[in-house]
Length: 127
Image 1: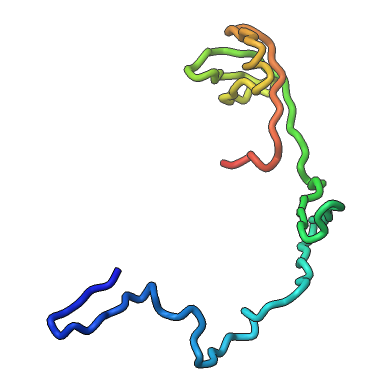
Image 2: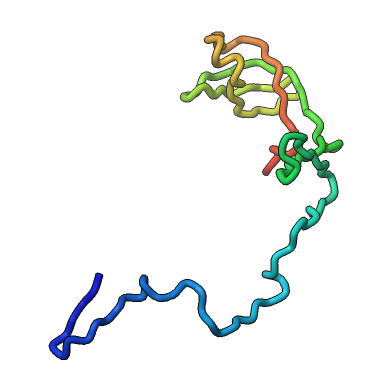
């Protein structure tokens, strides 16, 4: 877009400026081009390199050893909204649990008075 003034001089917008400037610019060493940067690995990760495209690297985490499941059996005492239940465990603790995805997909009904097995991973034990 060109704009003109009364002195008939043309002003070019910034979009029409040359792409490469003639003055050299300094770039920090961290921004310079590196042909093949090596990925940095963290503890507990493994690296997978694609055979079809060697420039694409996928990172995957190895399973944690401390990820153990806590399991207990109990009795459903009350049905709550949104697929949640109040459960009294065999050791007399009361907890609130919800239906897992596979049971929810299969439309299995759980009623008060049913015996259930409760599993909980250690990472979700937040108090």
